[in-house]
Length: 239
Image 1 (cartoon, rainbow, N blue to C red):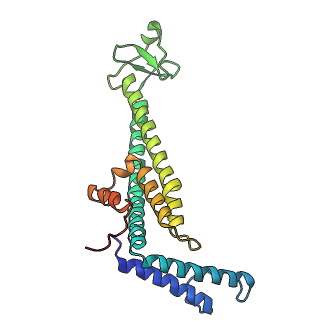
Image 2 (spheres, rainbow, N blue to C red; image 1 turned 120 degrees about the horizontal axis):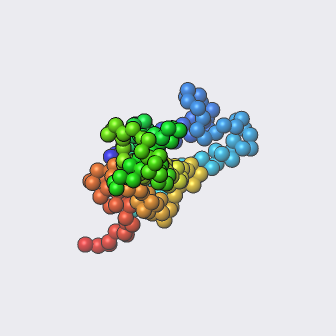
Image 3 (cartoon, rainbow, N blue to C red; image 1 turned 180 degrees about the horizontal axis):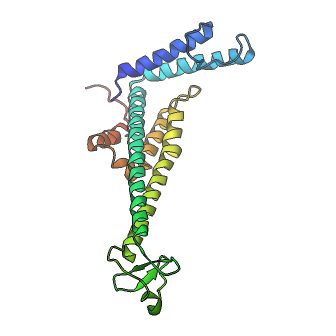
């Protein structure tokens, strides 16, 4: 879990970089905020905008409700990003293995004299890959070894590949279309997200998460994510 001290340290480094850039001090790192020539109108505008962001975010983080929500969404996003990458890696490995299995099946398939690959189904009917039936007279020319995959085995392998590819596409889509924009929004130096926008980000992370990603998140982390992304009510006054 990201500790408050780590978040504060990152923010402090950002503020220090900003102040160094404004002062024209070279700290050996690429400029993060100001890239124009010193004294230009664009530089001055960016200086004003950067200071406004600094002041705005610092003011927002003084509010315990906003701070709790901001920290919770940052952590939820980080957890989802890690689980998503783990899911992508796992799915890619499974897909490669499934494709290898199918290639092995095809290598072991029976063939007609013209090289067409054929398979027997559960009822003993000989079929081409597309399911069309081979005439008995032609099927009698096939020399069977007993190592050939069945028509059902090949179809099951193809279905598995299609399913894995669909999961991988969905997981990549979640990474690119949900988590990427969420990271951009929550780290936008020009416009810190409001409480309502933080809720929207959290809801998207949770609501759009595919099963492949959810399966990569430990149960404790999933529960924590759900708690972190709930709306935080106003504190009660008095006893």
